[in-house]
Length: 411
Image (cartoon, rainbow, N blue to C red; front, side, top):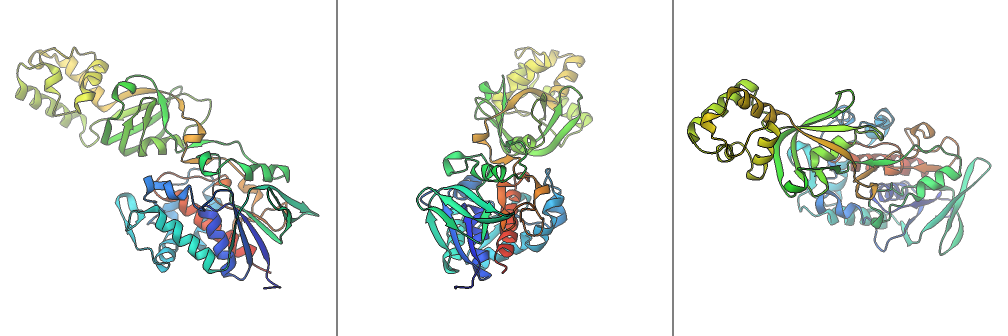
């Protein structure tokens, strides 16, 4: 294709493969550069190896789950929506299913089916995949001129798409290279912090390590103002370092550096205080003269009982039949508002995604093209957009990759 636009795509992840395959499908001559031996390494481990590839909702509902720069994504999501993503992968021979929370997975529960489908999409369109690391993106006169690679040196390209990811999961190749390319070309990059990341906290977390709490409500508040920054019902778990799980990861997206936070856990979100108090009276009547540590076993996981009682100021060996009304009230409050002081986020290397990146004000929303350097595009996690867990971040990768691929292929 001597007259085809010559496009380089840097990064063989979700957004990079989508961009490369799309550009090729639109007539471009595409070379995809990936530093790892295989493409899609990070994609292969998402969703615990099952790959939650999107969320089965409309665009407006989707944007409600994007806390950072949602308006920037409207154009690309409208052009390639979650429904379009689902249709795309099924057209590639990957049957999909929708689970709780509208999360979409391959029927096989194998992330590699998504990786293989994208790889086949690229190769089938004539994309050349090269294992090499890019050292620089070159530009002259306000327009991109090519790249410099470790193995091949300087290479000329008409368009360059940067899809290098953020700083999370560095072992999969996400080392922030794209952010450096942008900064050296005068493109603004916002500060990067971990998002969708476990939280560090003190006791009783280590003592409860491995315990999963289901159907609880987690509320995270700014410790200085008591302002709620996140609240949702679902699942979390304790770890030796603190707390993690779906609710905790989503909560972390709302937590800003330099601020102090407290986690509030409602162990019985389905019961109001009056109903819960009646439940306590019923259980205490049932257990008669038994110790409180035994009288609470229908209410709580065994490992949690002593910690809730301690929080309420109740001796675990006090007889439930002699518990005062004031102590029963204290227990009720503890069940509805068990508190854990958050010490901070885990390192960015453990984050699902990176918050921050190429400033969205530097890019054209419909095309992902840089406003400063013609022919240079950014897509996926390298951009300063991120969302909650539930398939939203991979959909952002697919939508922005699609937009960049379409635009870069235009003569």
